[in-house]
Amino acid sequence: MSVRARSAAPGLRARLRDAFDGMVVVRVLLLVLAGLFLGGIIHIAIVLGVPGQVPESAYARVAAFGPDGVFNRLPDVEAGAEPLPMLDPMMLHAACRYDLNEGPLKIEAALPPPFWSFALFDAGGRAIYSLNDRTSGAGGRLEVLVITTEQLSVLRENPPEGLEDLIVIETDATHGYALLRAFDGEPLLRERIETAMAQATCRGL
Image 1 (cartoon, rainbow, N blue to C red):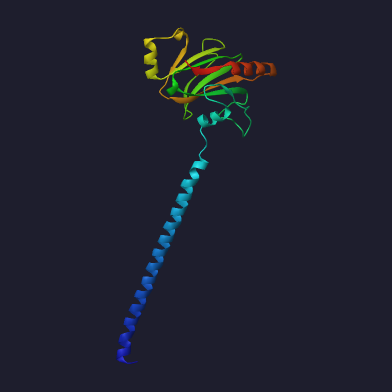
Image 2 (image 1 turned 180 degrees about the vertical axis):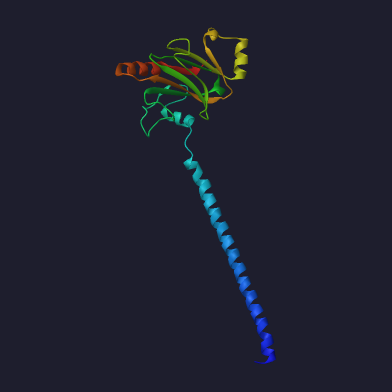
């Protein structure tokens, strides 16, 4: 091999090495871009799929059982088919959605023994207030006024008759629902409970 040929060989190897290194860089860049593209597609799919996976709120589910401003009997609690979360299968339930933007809400009910309870929830499902027949101090009679702070200030200027006899629940959560629960012990008692829940009221003051 001539001196000229030997001197040309290192240069050729250098060019081949540079070309190979360039191909590696291009392949790495292509892999990175492909990964970013695939990650973007997965992210978009997850974002679009989230609304369908988020459980419907209890407040929204109550609307399926009847109109607002009325106590609507909920279906009996069965495993895997609860009308609302955390309900007791030994109880009968009725729920009423409300909107305090339309004014204060007065709730009245007369539920039979041996046990009943009442609870108020905001639109997010958080409990605002609760009581039962043992803590109400009125036996089976329930009389509640749900009202915002601003509405209560106005009401005190000209209080309606019997205001002092009501359980006043002051809240700034304008949307929510009331829940009545009564122990379902026997067929005859069930009939009395269903009648009492049908007669319960949940309406503007």
